[in-house]
Image 1 (tube, one colour):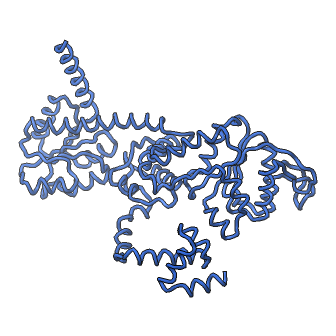
Image 2 (spheres, helix red, strand yellow):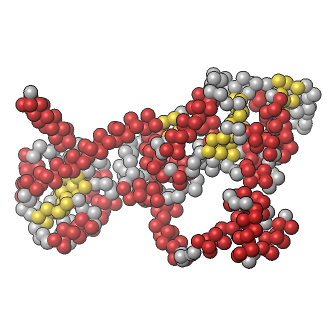
Image 3 (spheres, helix red, strand yellow):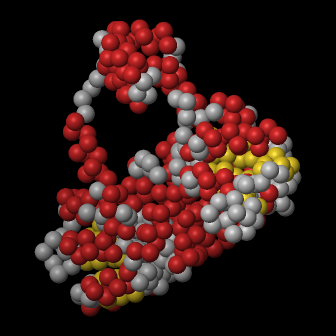
Length: 481
């Protein structure tokens, strides 16, 4: 039994080794014809198909066209194929593996070649055993990447939630909560920064709800003035206003029995909020210019990028409407709070735009990935999608590199260095003082609202202001407000 298992394991290992060898085609670059013949013969004996050339441009084209991801090159600091050529190769494909070969081996030269981006350094004459290990290592690495990519594609399918992608605990919690509320909701408030995917979450809730076969009507409240928004939502009769040449139903009638999604509800006026409150409370509407009251049965999903609690305190949003809407509230975390989702989103958008543009870009170079992971993404998922979309258009190599990214990301590190010049260490007391001043300024001196945002009582805020010597200024500002 043990012998049978050993034989089976040997056969599996041999099959994996043969498959791994098929994943790479080494390109051999050497100006010496005899050395070129010897290396070609040796690599063939090791079981690898190879491409040979004595011209650097041919090697560059071989890498550029994707025929080879492994280059064995006779490089030296003074020879025709020196480190400048190594830099050119790496610019063409930052992910290519370059094994440097030279007759003049020193420890310093080997470290210099690796520092410049080479994968390995082999002295001539090349030792067959060492060459075999180098080729097998690269081949195994590419085979592992192929299998990992296949697993990631399957994982991507498993982690996609109605067009939303995420594997972070924060997003998995959003998905789980959306599934729970979808069966029973009447009103839902979706809160999140611009570009986080609030509309996608709203669509997912509708698709999971008992009324998924009915209509979903979408309205961007920030895109219309009050008069047009009222007509869009409630409809109008002929002659109700200039240009009303016929009678039209609004979105609430259109989606009767289904769902209405009101995006950016925080941008609506107080008058419009009163009319929306009536719809929620009484489930009835009136077309503009008509005395007739119509009963409706719709589920309402609202979304905003504003802090509606702060808007209520500032008097810009009705408190009764806020509590009606927020009985069920879903917060979509910004991308900066779930950076572990960035690689998954990159893969998702790569697949999407490869299909859209007819390309076959497998991924990003390691340095491009590093830049994306370090970016703060103020525009959230929408910004990341735009970056990948434009990079897919401009990319000329197999992989998206830093040069394919927008200019502000290309200079990310330089910008960080410049911004860091003004940094100085501060005590916690100084930090709290600066933060309180900024919040007060944002609230235009309104202490009640500032205390709410800071998460402290108004008495505690007074104590901080007195300690920092800014009590008089804030008092005058509050009096003006």
